[in-house]
Length: 400
Image (spheres, rainbow, N blue to C red):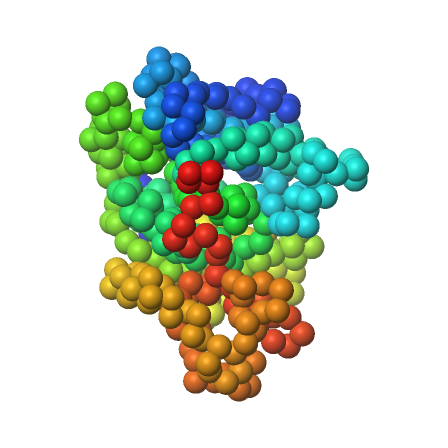
């Protein structure tokens, strides 16, 4: 079993947070400029992002008047962060669907006793204020860490705006992971029109994860245009990431193994991110069976902690050529022509979704839909529904 060589890392102590206190820092320079929202601690056992943002606060306070926009540093699941556990009642990073967000809207009369519902309600109050007052592009960054040892990597939802932003960072890019999941905060922000980028900084509780989160966040402020390079060294933070990330690659997520607590899922020991696996290789087990790789590729985010809904992912490296080709096809709106094929029709309630009768449309491999941005796949009444993200090329916030 081939393993990545990762240096021994210093372990850090849990952070101190106050339940319900989500805004760690709010810095406003030019009110007409871009807005950058950085989330940390959406999972309460992933605390490196909180520490990294706290490091940044003194310098941002000094630079506030020079900012070409607004910067918000937001703590996620504050009550789980206080207990240093992933979540209390439910995964906060799986409940940002339209239905749940509407239920937990500050205007909603529905009240539950679930802790993560309370957390989401508090965060929505903040986000509604930020987005309602945005006058220019909005960027949202979500800081995470992993239970297994790992080099850092970034994750983008598949819009051309997200791609353009993500490719400014010296990091391995994962494409399509958000389309495998429902209810992430970045999907929610993306659907509202923000440019989004996720970052996995390395293993939980390590000093390296904090350093990587801080470097990535400063680069996000530079790359978004809210902060001038003359005030913060791009080279310094790019060097931190280049020293940490190893080989830069573009990885397409092909498979997610979802789990439930009742499955009694257990990962086989020794797997690390980006480790090659072969089709049929035993990766894990649950109470019913051995779990094998459905195809050969690279394993990502193998679960070595008690809480979580994702056992592991499998991806494969792709050529930058496919990103270029996809961009060309989408620029010329080729996706609008897909309904000319038999068995493919527009979803009557969602202009960004297609209903595919797989018995008829056998000539269309799923990769064609991926190239055109239709990455999210869900089965509805024996029909395949493929969806693309909204706001692919244009921001709804500019010149609002």
